[in-house]
Length: 413
Image (cartoon, rainbow, N blue to C red; front, side, top):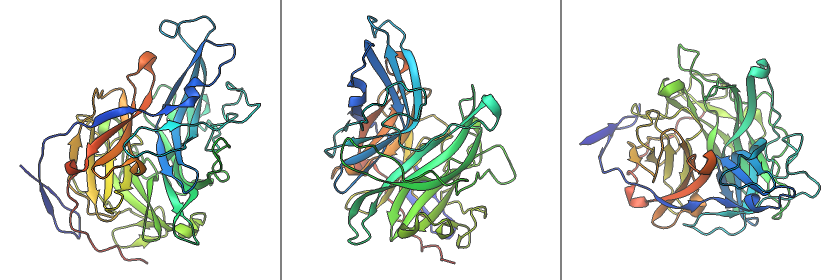
């Protein structure tokens, strides 16, 4: 069987279909948050998902999670039979891995701030809060909107060009109606930065997110019921920070499934006028301009925040993972030689114990890659008491599809 992917303006590339590989599970993302002292309680249960990472020059490996939920078990109770007390949910929490070991799951150290209660009255009063999130209710009490992280990448030191301790963070502000499993609207998306200090110190994004966010919601052409996930998976190439914009994501796997692309010079991340958005003709300064679709026609991405892009260390190829909207397989992976493509045909893969209802979101972690293996995580929702935790899995690099021949870079305006 031969599969063909075609990108406008680029030659078709044929690849032979292969067997669907199963990723090897090498363990969970562990953290000392689960073992911190819990005065007055028997134990705690930590639920978190959406872990993104970026290795810094001197401070270790920064990890940021989309959701962290803490439960406490009452005194004298059994964690196997008792129902825990709900403490609260925090969107965008951070931790540090002090020693990066390629091919091994991370053991994270949480920031600590004395005098801050573990179960505070306000959910932002926690030492591991990362994004300056304020929950808003534009639709009244029936709708909840917050900021979610969508990717990290370490920025170069402007003096030396080597990796620094400053990390670029993509994020999206989305709204959910109570009882609705998928986002009901996207307020927008943008980029902020964080400079990581010594292990144990608070980790905060640099200032409040821009309001309104830079990238507006982008529905399918001619419709209003499919939305975008916002800037995802920032990656560096040639002095630019590239940001992927999956949009047209409809409920239940519907929608038009497009992928836009934006870029900004690395030294101008805070300048709104410096961002450019890829159209069919060139890079436009107008974020509402009709976006080019950089993916082949066979792309049908997921309806949650799962698109992840990284570069293979020492090789330079770009790798993309995502959940297919069909949910019929655990995930798909593609490769390319440039952010704008052309992207290869997909290679499907599975993970051990995959559940189409409870498992989601693949995130690449290039600092954990080895010479022969690609390392990434996914959120496993099949734990005890319905707990969600990120797990680390690997795939042989030999299972990745070959990237097509590169296309010329889109012209600059």
